[in-house]
Image (cartoon, rainbow, N blue to C red; front, side, top):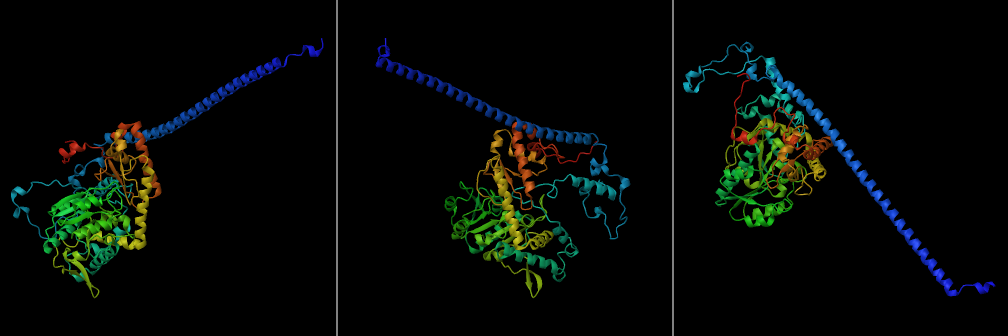
Length: 576
């Protein structure tokens, strides 16, 4: 049979071809499925590898945290061991005893055996029931006294040794040259009752300081009498009250923001005014609509600080001034927050009529524990005649006490103010000059905003906008995890940092007000930031450690409620 005869039919051959094609397709599909399966397995392996990498990264972070914690625990254990040894020898060691315990009759000093002036027996002019049979004043030799108080000074927490982020108080560095100048014999060896011609230098300092303050603040005249910011407020509100009384206007209300310093409503109330609170808006600033609803013919004044206590500049300050002035009221400036404005703007430009300024804050002089201070009061044209007297005037290069203001509210205190504080402020202003003051202001703003940006991921920031010299965080997030603002502030002591202001302003829950001032370096700010971040992590790692802090201070945390309700101010002598 030839080939032609055995050839398959065309249809059968086509059928075979189709079957082969389908078989090839099926094989390709199977191969594709296998390839997809391999890809999925590969992807799973990649995901598992990524998860392993993340786990390893977490382990590394935890390892670093544990190492930091180990170092801290080791350091704290060392401190506790040291304190334990100190405590064991507390009763025996001379340097840990009270000065009354160190007193010995044999140490009695004899610099003056007999006074060189006539003396009288107290029985001659005091009733017997007012006199004690003995007065146990400690008597020690000079060396023992020096050692005792030197030891106490080493236990102090001061701005010269530690960082003070103390908001609202401007606890800035005090240049030592200011102290030296205030200690010049021409200043400390004079008496305020001396004749004017004998104290021309002191009067010139007061006069020149007033001129500088007028230039810095945009106000017309100043009195240096007030001894503190609170007394300066009282002076300002008394002048406003007397002005309205003389004008025959019955204005009896004072408007105060809900974020104000606590002294503002207290001062206004002491002067007999009724207090109206104006709310803040969502930006943390005075709500203009609400302010308009409060202002009336009864409005005597509005007390305001700018920037406000949230560290925010009142953007509508000129509108606020216009609203108050239209009703015949005065705009009072609480000058505690002048620091970030120096050289850039001033209360006079903003429309303020009267202001007090804390020389012991803005112009760098030591303060604390109630004094010494200087809350000098400045006024615009309308209130010059109401300033406390005497002022200091100048005529033909002669300085004199000026009693000319005929509507003066009188004296606020003896003599002419805390003179040494005035000298320090005068030295500070002269040393920095116009450019230096502006640089101090800008640096304080820069430092506060640096802290704000670095910590706003760790702490809640109620008003996330550019601040001035201070920033207010909320510890609400930390409170939910068990640590309050107070706990965090106390823990900072263990890092060698003074606690910042807590729970103020009142409109921010668990508030932590931080004010770095202009003199702190970036290194100090970075250390502060890292310390707060570590404390935040510690909340999850060892909350009780925070609750028990401070661990390294001489005095541990007290029961503040018990201390306030049941104070025990007695001195307990060891061994009694």
